[in-house]
Length: 170
Image 1 (cartoon, rainbow, N blue to C red):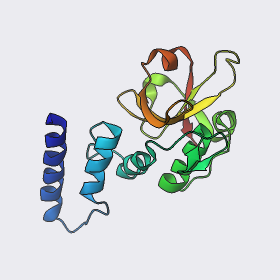
Image 2 (tube, helix red, strand yellow):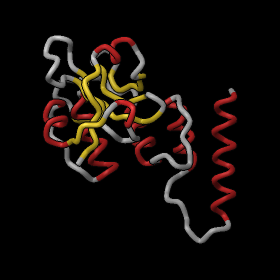
Image 3 (tube, rainbow, N blue to C red):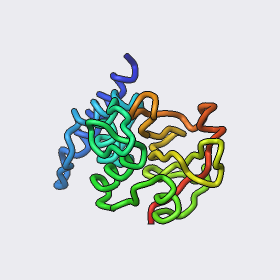
């Protein structure tokens, strides 16, 4: 309950702060509040609102190998779709190709919102088999084979054990 009150207070402050200015914000605060609830995280003023709203609209999309739509998506299809919509950038189609061709390597401690996060499957430790998009506070959004599009923590045992690298898109 406290989280929802906090979201509404933040939205109220944002509206108050922007009502006297000449610059009109282009996003709907109801969309931000809904995104915060779906992602189960606070969205701050400094955050990329377009990223959070777009990612939240994919939550619950089922996993489908080779999928690229909200009817079903795999991990690299998900990251490609988000990057095309939010940043206007085209990414390669596979996780390894995104890591190798589209990104500069970034250490886990230096991750920023929108960076890609790569994981190996435990067998081929030098090859990325999974990719997601870093949000903040150690959390990332991705298309999981078991539950579809979801937000997870880098601290979860599986992701900590299979961590490969972060990547900042060129």
